Length: 302
Image 1 (tube, one colour):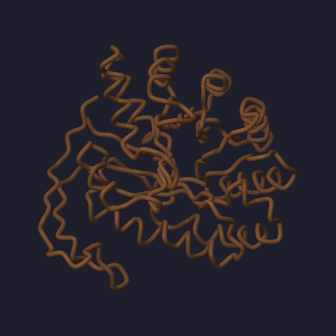
Image 2: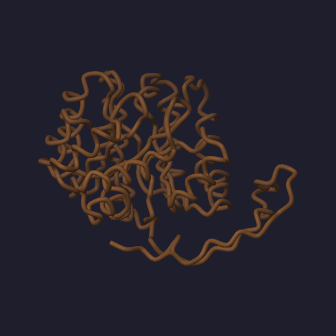
């Protein structure tokens, strides 16, 4: 089987991860703009970060046989620095139309402050302007109320539910999100958030319609192979192959292809890579000899 990881922070990962991911069947990833662990103090640092997402990281992934897409947005945590947030909002339109940008995100609430609400709303309007999907970050604290509040705000702005992926769901929020017609994504972490055992039970309960599995692997304790590992456990526990295909591949493609930037043909054809290709003068080779790598045509089975 082949997989898409539609929420993974590859700037925090090594090239070993890319190699392991491709070997496990991951053919495409979506990297959301997010908080890097330390607050940024200048708008220029956001500009360079966004440039990395649409530039070097997209190139680096390609050198390991993976198609890379991203989302662009001001994360909820840093939205609380309003002086900086205003400057970042000026940057977002410059990147929203870049090649490979499939959504505005991840945006939403952290502590559900007035500033977070303000910039969440402004970025929903930006998504509407650019006709892009939205990736919503639901808060880690008071998750249920924050998730319901997020959907209320989305509906106030008139964005269609099929254009919105609500992420970081759990058993407490799943039914609310699905009942209101949104895509429901689940982050699979080794020790926190949703584990793959719990994910199996969610799919058994709700089926595969509009449910998406991702890893959200980042600089913390996380696993870039969460999607294929969860898929394997689903199959082992008797979930139909079609449902695994939907939750670990097809649903993400359907949701984010609405951007017009993501197409299955992007990764299905044979790729021949020598890894000596340059991006702004740099390659992924770190002194080693270039070798030809052939990734054959991919046949996707439902």
